[in-house]
Length: 208
Image 1 (cartoon, rainbow, N blue to C red):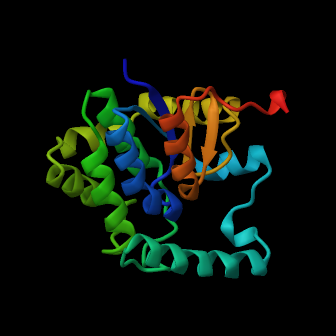
Image 2: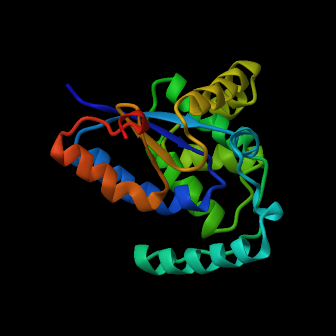
Image 3: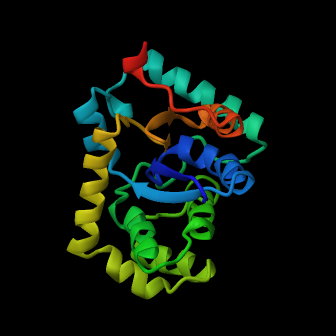
């Protein structure tokens, strides 16, 4: 039986964008079942002691820009460090992912297009028409999914994902949770793959 991994992220996260391709390679290599769990980051940060980017010390903000350049080169990607429509309200875009999963669709193609749309094409993913077009191009029913994404029912799932994240000790994006063990950050994907390859049990802080 395939193992399952909970994937916590939000579309505006550059680190989720950087890690999505390598993560999907691990998913394919180990035939993982992915539970996509978009989560609102501002509220998650507030509850777990993190700060939104604008409130971080300038040294941390500058270092972030250096890291983005390093990983852009490492991953062989070509993207804007300060895309035109970033930051943006992710509620509708993240909601499309939730709505796609609810309807039984694999959201991976949409996610790949959406990440590239933000960071490479500099499109506005707070715009419903843009989301419809991206979903349609991904082979999904864009109009229906965007309409559903705006509903209170999807908003409730989005909120529940935040509660689930906190309960799982997740505090940022992306985070991959395997058997209760959190792998935070796209630079931890190799460690996730190592855990899967070895078949070891999950590491716990209580065991230390």
